[in-house]
Image (cartoon, rainbow, N blue to C red; front, side):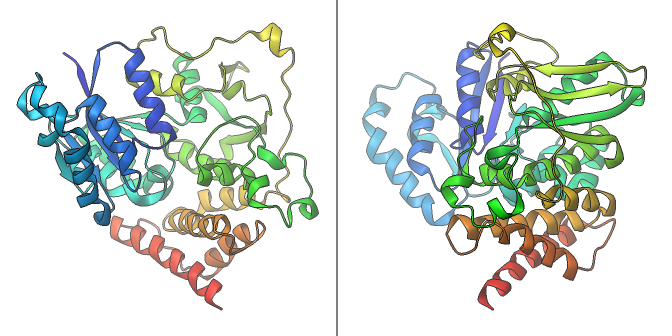
Length: 398
């Protein structure tokens, strides 16, 4: 039986790579649901190729246009289509709610690759439905780690990390029990400003922040790498994913991006997961786990790399890291505010409305003003998320 896949965020970098992996795996998986927010042209192309039963356009203003593209652009294919009627292009069920894709009864695996908090509710619902969740974006575990892990435990759902660092930890943990772990070491490329001083990044441009030395990612995630906010979020994510305190999670800057993370066990053994910097490998491992199969990721040639280097991150220059550890200890609505303020601030930076240095300043302002609550409900977490976004807007209006 083919496993049926829903890709939340199929037009983004992770979504496109997931489709490449599914193509390479040769018919063992069926794309049953695809989703997008604005890039409806690419979504329409994907629907034409993969013939999913479900398509979700989360921007209501784009739904009618998406349907017109399908109808006008692909109408000719429908007359000669020999596929079952339900799979014909004009039979694609179109929704605006991600839950329609994430919780459909036919879906076996949900690949969550929606940037930001937008997919949180759908992922929680998919967890309640007992799905296998291949989570690529950090926000579900960052914002609602306590809720999500509780639901997974109760429903029997499974979380398989796709984020390269957490996939690496997950793979390394196959060598031992979580109770035998001394510490988890998340590696970081250091981003475009590795080795820079506070003064050097004060007036960093958008182009400089987006010039990542190793990875080809979306703009928001690339800016997070420049501030090292991505590592701060990963600490919080790892805390929930592997049930370890933040004190047992370290970060090392590793500019070659060959070792994606390491696990140190109590006996002194350190297990590292190494591979070429390619998101296709962690995506494939999540789909084929617990098995490994031949894939499309280029194999390593260590003799060509020659040397691997490591250094401690400067938490005074990259203050987001320092704040992230504090937030991980506080828990509750703190992480929701931390994440939302960053999302809002990065958006303003990419639109040229604030300086690079203002991103972390706005995050600190929101955290200073917020009254944290532990054991928060989903509604309270989403309320904290909305509050932080409004605070960033208020500050800009001032």
